[in-house]
Amino acid sequence: MSENKPTYVIMAPRYRDDSGGIMFLHGLANELVRIGERAVLWPTRWKPQSFMMDVARHLARRSTYRMMPNTAATLARSGDLVRDAIIVYPEIVNGNPLNAERVVRWLMYPPRLRGTASSFGQNDLFFKASDFSDDITLTGGAPLLHLFSIHPAYKDRGNKNRYGTCYMMRKQANKTVLHDPERDICLDGLDHKSIADHFNRCQRFICYDEATMYSQFAAICGCLSIVVPGFYHNRDAWVADRPIAKYGVAFGMSDTDHAISTQHLLAQHLLMLEENGRDTVLNFVKLTRRAFHYY
Image (cartoon, rainbow, N blue to C red; front, side):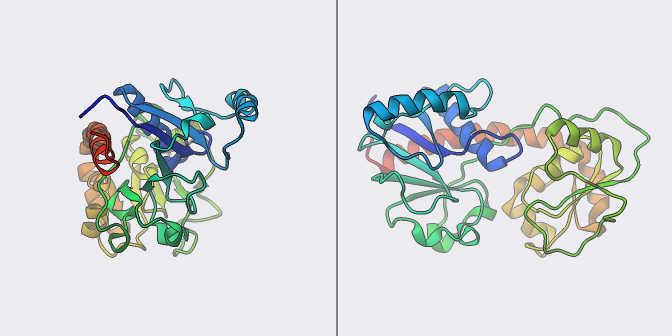
């Protein structure tokens, strides 16, 4: 393989640490640079401009576009959109707004549920964050690309006097309500420190979203974590799509014994997945170079 490295241009919204997808995108740019690749971040809805307009916009955007703390990646310029650049779009992006010839679609949520699948190109290269987000009829089975990390706010503080229930609805507002809306604490929209405080204070956490890491974060904090089923019919199918769900979290109210008995295994399991994530980035580089003829 030659030293003729591609430039990876990753389209991403401004950084937020309450969005797994956005954290993945910024994390990918950072990890690519860390291992010696060329990678820049292209803000969502930012269009290519003339050279002078691009310089002015770049200076303004640099002060307003939030990057991941301590990232090794930099903000893109229009000059990064060379013909052989590899553009990475998350599945939320319709079409090919940067008119790229080399397109990667990183699926972090099923694209047919996003309504974007029909806008993808025939020659696009697909990667998946998990089996849940893949669509085999569209991709033929996408390779895995994930970058899990444990937010430092989530630790078990050893509170033995837990009480009450907290919950999150997130994207799932159409499931049977299992919490008490008048008494229980809604965590949607809170920052990580506040959520971690509740996880360390409450006895149990009910999550209506089967695809968020907050369920694992609750378990790490020693809270009984329960996911409300809906998309999946049983635990085996859920874990097959989301290996992160193997330990420490109950799949429905009748599965709490499993959550309690395996909670102590979760932290080490997440560390292993975090390390595996770095390997998936190396595989991403290998596959994109091969697909787009970098040798």
